[in-house]
Image (cartoon, rainbow, N blue to C red; front, side, top):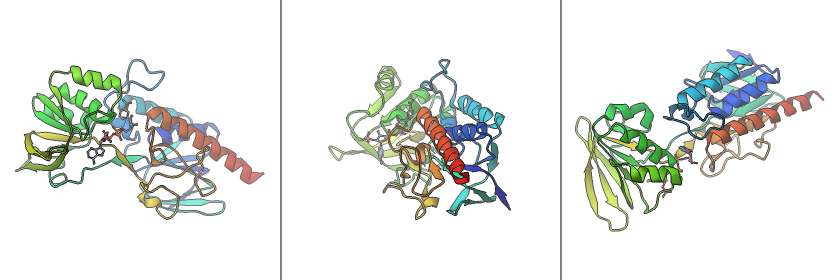
Length: 308
Ligand code: NAP
């Protein structure tokens, strides 16, 4: 199966859906590919407090459903398909997917990022039997239980605060003596009675029997090792871009983030990128949305230039 469009967008998070909205409003034939439900990582966030214009603090799912509705309203077609390869062409590029080929002169790569793993023994073994990467998804399963959180950034502290609403105790294991998370989240965490921080420490092993029973934790300053008993561990230590399928095709940095210029252009004419696949620094819904708009505007100018 192959399908022709004006703009093919890979990824249905904040960046891709905004690109879809803009390109569709430009009266272009737009196909957006997502390997699962559109909404991206933002849809798995408990609440979104910092997306402007939404002071009522929607859930991530509610906010992203609005992104989907908005893009679809103006004509973006959403297809479930996993992008596997990009073949650049002149003028048409081909995105090869699990559901066939999608061909267009302009492609917007907005395939986002995935949860970073700790890579410690037991992490894979106890996945879904204690180990989780998503507090809003799995948190309610840990009502009145003891949970651990690995990480010290916004995701970890926001996740820990959410978990503290259900769990008996939440211990955040952080490798330094200072959190990376924004101050407002830090002060909320310090005020929460059932939330504590295990400073200067890293989890070195997830241990258990049928299910996880705890984690081995090492103090990086003293070298001391202890076992913290817990029913779950939420690993919230950042993310890695989903760009492996583009290796050798598009320029990226050593961590896999796509290199783009200030108009969201990649090194291939007609291929643009936006959102967390190309943003190692800000990783905010509003930034991803802004870049999605930029990529779509650049794509429109590029298509118009082809006809000139
Ligand atoms: P992040 O800001 O990169 O923080 C990752 C945290 O995990 C850091 O504290 C880091 O420690 C720790 N870490 C990384 N690798 C580790 C490892 N191998 N072992 C142990 N600890 C490790 O990632 P994030 O929290 O996912 O946030 C990503 C971006 O999304 C940020 O820009 C953040 O502001 C944004 N975000 C915003 C919100 C919000 O605005 N409410 C919510 C979630 C995320 P170090 O501190 O020592 O480096």
